[in-house]
Image (cartoon, rainbow, N blue to C red; front, side, top):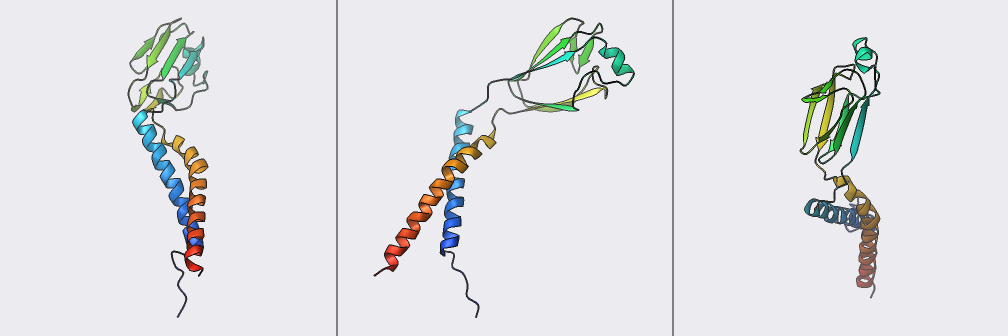
Length: 165
């Protein structure tokens, strides 16, 4: 009959303690972030619409190096600065020639907007909540692994003490 490995073997015990330590610290960190809202300060993203943009986009040229969509967090501000001689639009927002418009992104959303300064004619904007649970990974690794190693060491020492006469 083949020998089954016990779940209390040193290898499984160590792996379980390491995983348990990481998950425990991750859970604590994530709960803290969710409860106390460890948010980044709002960021400002400026889009400068240079002179000649309307003419270039009408011929299929791309005067701006813009991706097809932009990502923001709630509270960020999108600044549209129009240096063109033509009025430009991004969705519901109109920017007159020489005008600078500040748009507060105050709620989670995701959509594509008609955009007069993008060669594709539209620009996607995604606004996510300000909570970033990936921030909990760093404490989970730097605190959880040592905690798990300490727990594994304690279990191994405890097993030896109970096994020795």
